[in-house]
Length: 371
Image 1 (cartoon, rainbow, N blue to C red):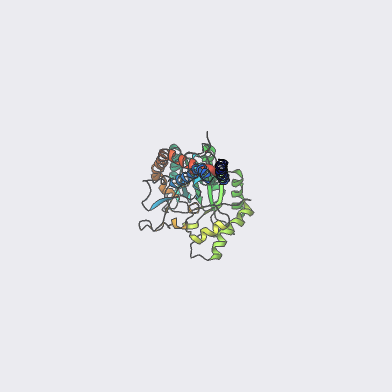
Image 2: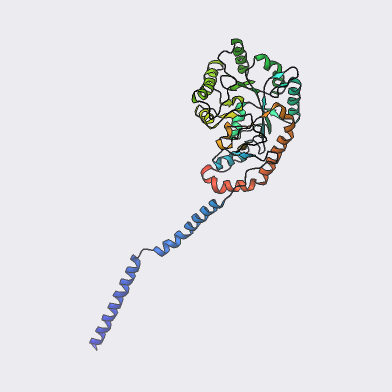
């Protein structure tokens, strides 16, 4: 009997020991299953967020039916989040704000057979018609701020550029009345000829100091046309020579270069950038410009053989289009329509762009500014 009880006790103790050991082993086992269960929702969330970001697609760039089929809009701001933030910031220029860049040469008192020049009657007619259609003139500084950062400017703006060096009398007769009446400045593409008479320099310096004639660079020697075939020495002379002359005579550094004779190329554009120029103006009448939107061509157009293709240079701000004086009146309606249609397109895609910003950009750039 005692032996039976002893055996039962031994079995009990052995069983108890085994169970205790099992519980100890279980308690020492890492909680891998539990941890994985806790980590799975976070991993799933990260994966879903990554997939959501990658799946976001922005609406296509606005296409204008008023452009030549070979002239297509090019953007130039690589940072998509930055461009969206500037586009929809309530303090920025309204979507659809458009700039018509106008090129004048000599303004004559009588008739002219030169298509580059205009007579004073047509000049005054053009200026008054632009104002009647709601346009306002801006200067180069305002234009650069708009193109780079979408700083607010009038919804219909014009940048008036008169190519070539003139005496102060030219500006007094042709432009001062518009400055006094409407506050319209004018940009002058100044050719820094070494033999320019002293009185011409002094008269223009006085206008520069008044603030309504904004001189910008157009090279050093007249009739120079730059291209990729131009020697490095000539490119340097035209670009650096302007910087030197402006520092000596106007006490400023020009940041816009009006390509002399409309000629440019990849090498001249690259050299201009290296020297600090931020804007370049061609003689190609492609259309108006907007923030992050410049019409350019990637190939030669047989119907317009004098227009140099600038798209493949891939620097829209250095190859900006301009309307010649005789093209302005017939182009005003198309420019107005382009701005209006671009504004409507932007509003139609606003929700999609704001959603993209919220998902893709907010974490790095912060919330979209509110009114």
